[in-house]
Amino acid sequence: MLIDSHCHLDFPDFAPERDDVVARAVAAGVGLMVTISTRVKRFDQIRAIAETYDSVFCSVGTHPHNAGEETGITVDELVRLSAHPKVVAIGEAGLDYFYDKAPRDAQAEGFRRHIAAARLSGLPLVIHARDADDDIAAILEEETGKGAFPFILHCFSSGRGLAETGIRLGGYVSFSGILTFKKSDELRAIARDLPHERLLVETDAPYLAPPPHRGKRNEPAFVVHTAKVLADTLGVTEKEVARQTTENFFRLFTKVPHASSSG
Image (cartoon, rainbow, N blue to C red):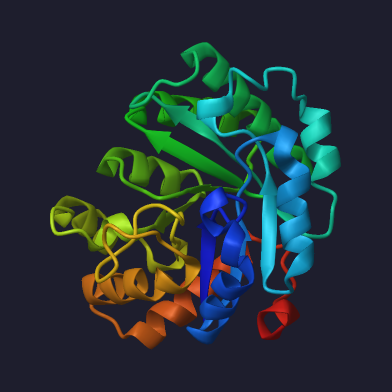
């Protein structure tokens, strides 16, 4: 079994055929999916999707792109919403200096609020990091000093230094379809050197479809292609990558019941 640890099933791209998308994923051997929140104000939609499918869980949080819109979201509210049985993570939150769609101070404040919520709830924080390696690492160092919290660097495309910092602080690293792209030799080299017990796979669907679907809408079923490239990169079998990443998922996403993988 494989697990898509990060997708966005609430996005309009999937609305016309969400049932089929989930069914195709399960048919492809993707036993579980986590659909990730980007706006707390739209959390009801995310939660409804997770409640609809046995194989789908969700998170609650504010994407850094939307940090400026949701400055009023409190730590207490995140923790309260995370109590729902289907909510298994906080986020995604973090810093994005590539698009800079929200003021950087609002991104940082939001990031710290989500860290506090992860620490209080015990749920893993899903971290979005783009072109902000140094500031992400500094905040992780500082906040871990206040008290450890579980986290994952999702859709990893940053430098080796951030990966190593994340691992040292107890975090996990998740690879998306970017790992499969021809120009991602440096990223594959980073993946090759990380501890196998800290690796996960994801799609970030509907974005970043791996070959042979490059340029098309991504969907959770396609995580099998990323897992294959990760296996080749690590020099292990696809079966071993499926076993290891699934084991890692349950170790990090502790709220997901193991029994759900057969549902």
